[in-house]
Length: 108
Image 1 (cartoon, one colour):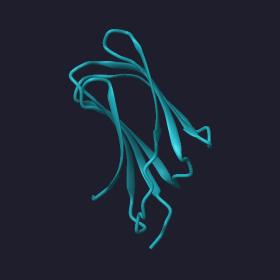
Image 2 (image 1 turned 120 degrees about the horizontal axis):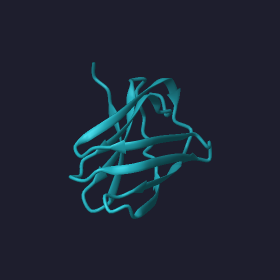
Image 3 (image 1 turned 90 degrees about the horizontal axis):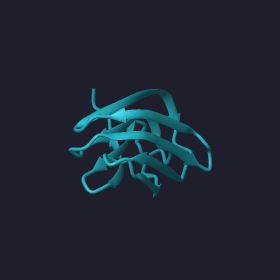
Image 4 (image 1 turned 30 degrees about the vertical axis):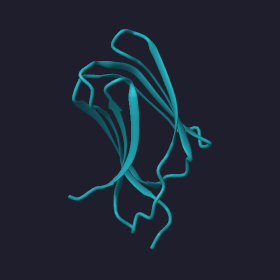
């Protein structure tokens, strides 16, 4: 079993009923960054990756909520054995300005 997580894609999912804007995610300590201008309610943005190992331990996530108020969270990134399969790193924005980060196996 591999202890490394092999990412195939990153997904930013808006599971709230509000538009979120100016989403910026910075991984630490690697400095890998991604930005998205806007995600509509119950929609997502998906970024395909050349399968790479997840080397970061945490991420700083910044965005503007529906009222234009700046929100910021630092979250630990999930780590678990990937068994060599393709994985998606999902940033899930929930109602009440909550944020959940998950790894999910991709089945195609």
